[in-house]
Amino acid sequence: MKQVHVAVAVVVVNDQDILIARRPDDKHQGGRWEFPGGKVEADESVEAALVRELDEEVALPVALGAITSLMKIPFEYPDKRVLLDVCWVEANMNDALLAHGAEGQEVRWVHYSRLNEFTFPDANQPIVVAIQQRLDALN
Image (cartoon, rainbow, N blue to C red; front, side, top):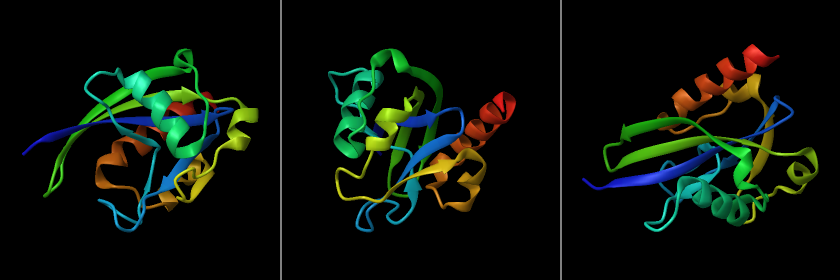
């Protein structure tokens, strides 16, 4: 089974709010919420993939310097294997206000303590835990 390399952005504003997007119903894990991101192309770095994907998916401009690695998650679904390369992305409030579902998907800024109220793909559960632990320590 082929493995898909996916760059995932935990976009945070003011150490409080996290950007999430609802997956289209006709996609893998459709209807669930996710952290923005997408496939890493063969010729690009994870950081470059995130800059591209955040612009394409949620119209959020991000500088390479605002991206730091958080964790890597290998995960196997019944129909595919993924390697999630998860990064922490600091966004400023002015840019955050402009973020929207550029591909028609619903997006929300959610206080990190409320992430458990949303249904994420199984592979994303460790990300939710990591976010809450990190931000609990800061707040």
